[in-house]
Image (tube, rainbow, N blue to C red; front, side, top):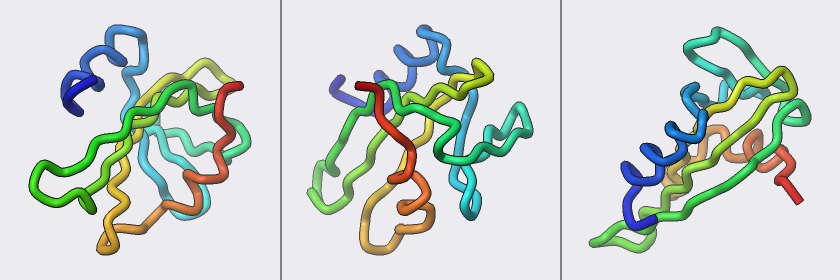
Length: 96
């Protein structure tokens, strides 16, 4: 994938339609109004993008599946300015 929008569009077509975000020690599925413990989720895929002008502007798009069948995406910026939720996301196991 070359762009974040391309990755998001393809993942949406694959059923990853829920928008997710870190919320304290949980991951929140915004539309479904559900909160998940990281161990109740699996990272199915991830795509990394670096900023065109500043390689430190790293973003990662995660395709996440929950045990209850909810599938969504979570986009994280890993710049020094934006580290909220990073530790919670790191606790989510990846598909083997």
